Amino acid sequence: MLIKYPQNQFKRYKRNYKKTESCKLLTNFNYDFSIKLVAQSSGSITYNQMIAIKTKLNKFLKKNGLLKFNLFPLFPITKKPNETRMGKGVGSIDNYIYIVRTGYTLCEIYTTSSIDISKILNLVKQRLNLKTKIIKLI
Image (tube, rainbow, N blue to C red):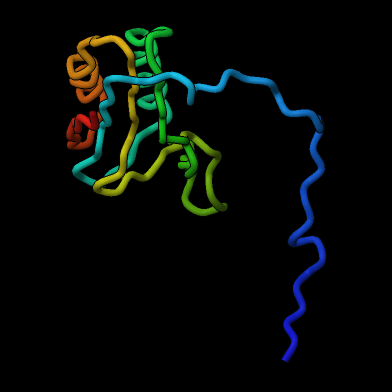
């Protein structure tokens, strides 16, 4: 029995720009210290929390290290205004969240200098509503 797939399913999407951007390759650097932040409980992280974490980490790291941030706001949360009556469909999108499972790495930090990264990650842990654990890789 032959299975027919739709023709447009495997086509590439049309791109606006065909040339790729030239960027710095970060694989040439030897990072001496690396730490990652791992979730120990499941829950959700809002878009505002993600921005707060990212700005806090970039403020301390600046150009001394590499930050791998694994969170991205995927799931929309809808909300209706308080004055509306019941029914008439779903409300408008209010916020975006990312659902985190246990054992998921939230972010990884690679640095060449011995900045006290554990203190920075403890400040980040205060912004989250999840239980997290700091793991030193190297």
